[in-house]
Length: 144
Image (tube, rainbow, N blue to C red; front, side, top):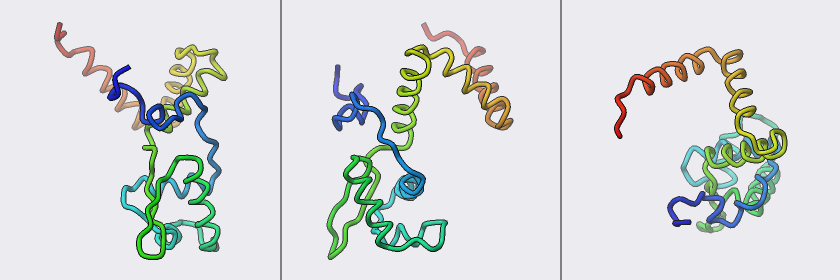
């Protein structure tokens, strides 16, 4: 398989494994890292929406994300700065692959159907955007 067609998780050696389990705090920290700028633990703490979290908690959360391969780090001065190693979309894709294997025996149709129902029932704006996208693609001239 050519290098550019392999997923980032595959290139990182994580493709054959399941997506890492991330707790609520780990996901909150990843949301901050996904903003794109390298962040120190202090910066992550300042960006956390929940008050009452200690710096040591953020540091240990960042360390867990680093060990799971979700974040990279570099030493700057006397502190590490972290950035996401796995893009949000790549994690979502891997989670969907895991769900497809675990719940639908590898069959994508029930996963897509369940997602379509979720969107139709819970997010009217997204449902309308998907409908418009599908309408536009079905009206596009065939390029073959």
